[in-house]
Image (tube, rainbow, N blue to C red; front, side):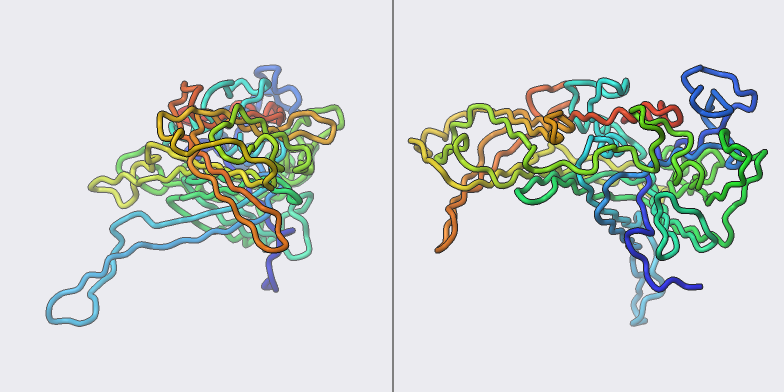
Amino acid sequence: MARNRVIYQSQALFLAPSSTGVQVSGVNSAGTGPTTYSSVPGATAPVSTGSLASGISLLKKLDRVQSINFNLTINRKDINEFGKLARLDSIVVESPTVGLDFDFYVTDGMNERLLGFNMYDSRDSQTIQGIQAISGLIADTQGNNYYIPTFDEGEDVVGGSLKPSTTVVAIGNGFINEYTFDATVGQIPKASIKVEAFNIKSDYADAPVTLTANASPAGSVGADLLTITGTSPAINILSSPISKYSDVGTSYKIDQYRNFTGVGYTSINSSGLFTTGSSLITALRPGDLILSLSNLTDTMNDLGTSHVQSFKFTLPLKRTILQRLGNTFGYARIIDVPINMDFTISAIVSELRSQNIYDQLGSPTKKNMTVTLNDPNGNAKVSFGLSGAIFKSESFSEGIGDNQKVDFTYGIQIGGSNDQSNGLFMSGSYGAYTDAITSGYFKLGTGKL
C-alpha cells in the first residue's frame, strides 16, 4: 500500500564511518579477543569485515536533526551537428551533482565528531586538543555515506520495527562544504551542514531480511531480527579505474535490533542503554551561552558593554573535483584554499568609545574569541574557539520604535592543522564515542584508509 505522505517521525539520518571502508563489523565466532568488547553479549572480538548476516551495523544516527533536504542533478552535454536541428545524443562527461543539507540542535558535540570534525574530548583517543577542527576534513579523501530510512506513516524510527515498505535513500562519498553555527536570543543554538556527494541511490525493501537465531548478531538472545541491507552507495575513488563499489565488506545494514532499539550499545552513565542516538542532552539554551572576547578595541561601539543578541559563524569548505582521462567520476574532491571564514555579532547598542577609523588602517591586531554552551547547571558541553580574528566592519541601524542595533563582522583565515593562532577549534563532552561496538571505527582524516 502506497504511503499518503512522509513526515519527520518516519525518517532519520544515519552516518557510516567512511564511504569505501567497512559499514558492518563481523563478530569472531569463537568469541575471543580483547576484553574491551566484553560488554557485547555473546562475543568479544569485532573484526574489520564480516558477513551481512552476522555482522553488526556500524551506522550511527545523528541526534536532534531538525530538517533534511537532498537533491541530484545529472550533468550532460548535448551532441549536435550541422544539418540536424535536434541533438543526436546527450552524454555524461562529468560527475553528477548530489547535494544534502540538514541542520540540528547543538548538544554535546557528538554530531560534529561523527561528521569528521576534530571535536576534542579527553575520553576520545582519536581527537587532539589544540588541533584545527577541520584538520581531518582536509585530509579526508573519501568522505562519508549518509543513509535516510523511511518507515510507515505513524511509526517512530526510534524504537520502531522494519517492515516491507521501509525504503532507504543512500548517499555516497559525501563531503562537507559548509558548516554554520547560529545562536540567537529566544532560539535554540543550531548548526547547519551542507554536503556535496558523488552518488545517490534508493533501496526499496520488498521484504526485510529475517535473520534466524543462529545467524543473528551476538546478543540477540535467540530472537529473529529484521534487517534492511544494500550495497554501498559509494564510488570507489581510490581504485583505478574508478567504479561502483559493491564489495560485501562495504555493504550496509540497518538493523532493527541495534540501530533502533539500542541493544548492544553502552551508555556513558549508569542509567542503562541508550537508543539510536548518543546525546543525553535534549537541547542547550541561549541563556546558558558564554561569549568570551579578548580586548576588542577596534570598534566604535563598546562591545563589552553591549547586549549581544546573536552570534553566528560560517565555515566555508568549498571543494573542487579533480578529474582525469578515463574516469567519469572525479578521483578527488579537495577543499579550496585559503579558507576564509567570517563571524558576526549582533547587539543592542549601549556605549560608544573614542575611536578613529584612520587609526585602524595599519597592521590589524588579531583577536581571540570563545563561545561556550553550558547546561543549566553551568557545566560546559560544547565550546568553539576562534583565533586570529581581524575586524572587518561595523554597521549601525535604528528606526522609529526600535532599539539601535550594531552588527560586527570579523574574519579569520584558517591555518594548518598545527597552527594554534589562526583558525577554528572545537571541544565537546560527548564521551559516548567510547561505546563497545563502534569504538575504533569512526576515524578522522587519513585514518579512514
